[in-house]
Length: 76
Length: 456
Image (cartoon, rainbow over all chains, first blue to last red; front, side):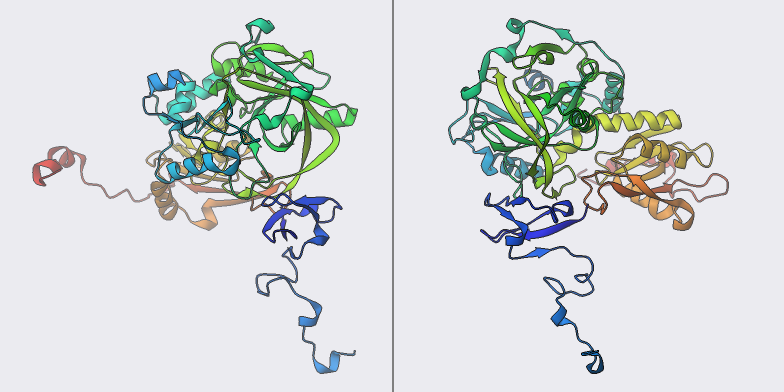
């Protein structure tokens, strides 16, 4: 199953969970320091897939402000 | 252990220095041994419990580190690899009814603790690899079909949560189907958590027994004698547990409850992701005062070897489909999801038929390589030579889509759906094919190396 990386908000160490846990409003459990936390509290979550592909090579994924659009299209 | 020391001297070593298993200290020893190619069983005689005190219990690891040790458990101490597999197959196709004994006759009932006296922190529990979600037991779970009579014996991982609770993860197999049934009825399911028994009983946990055959009977077949069972303290006759266990934790899996469990270093060699698992509540613990806990090092060779019954089942099915199959190699084939089959090809199409029989026998398999009987399936260099010289991808490779795979396969992106691949690396028999370049046998017998090169 696809997984997502998540950083513990307490110890900052990164581990991973089943993608099934991504949308659930349950607390995750850091295997390193034992802290329980909600995904939204994590300083870094990395899912991969569209927008964060290996081709894009941008750590942390693609944010809208990173995208260049031709001058004529900016307000279009 | 006594039998192991007598029949295979050197296969068991004892570590008497104090170690803390929940701080990776026992697996640190095993990891270094495996790096040196050493796979002896290791009895850790002085280990700390989860409260930090030296435990009266000992931990035995690497019980399944070599096939030779499994052979001892199956009463075939000096057998070759394929002979041990054939013995496993013979034992697992027999069934011997269990024998119920009284409490007084059951070694596991020597000490009984319940209620406030029950505290799982009194156990030494191993934390195996760095990303494990907590200390883990690797026990044998005994359970009974809810509303039925069949007993199931399975190997499951259990993560320590608190003094009375563990998380239990199960692949979608028999125990999982019992839990699903219990959930539909809204009733918790009682189980026994066996933390040590005869190694042949432990490998019963990996049998591919059909759902209509009782696994206590199958355990008897594997042991070569009836499994002695005794009523549990908590559930009486409703849950009979193995009487000769070292330790049994009795309790129940709660329906409608889940825990966040893992990551856990699995047989794949990877730390499997954090996921949802079931909640187990301990109700009682019974044990021998000097109990030995059998623990598996899941990321390592031992864990693969413990799957021997599956390899034996696959071998049996493949041989049934194509009787000219000589040998199969799953464990030691270079990965937990490969199988290599060697056969004497007597007609075209046999390799594919043999491979399909293997793939249908177990969802552990996704890649099957079939070689001729001049190739040793346990020698990966020879196997790869056959693949290099006897395979044309467009003709001899079959890709299968949408197979039921294994939930712990890290390459599977869907929860369980996988691809499969068959490589037919056998020589064609319907057209001429070059022979191996070899020195004539008559000359090899006449010209001996030691007669011409000194020091050999």
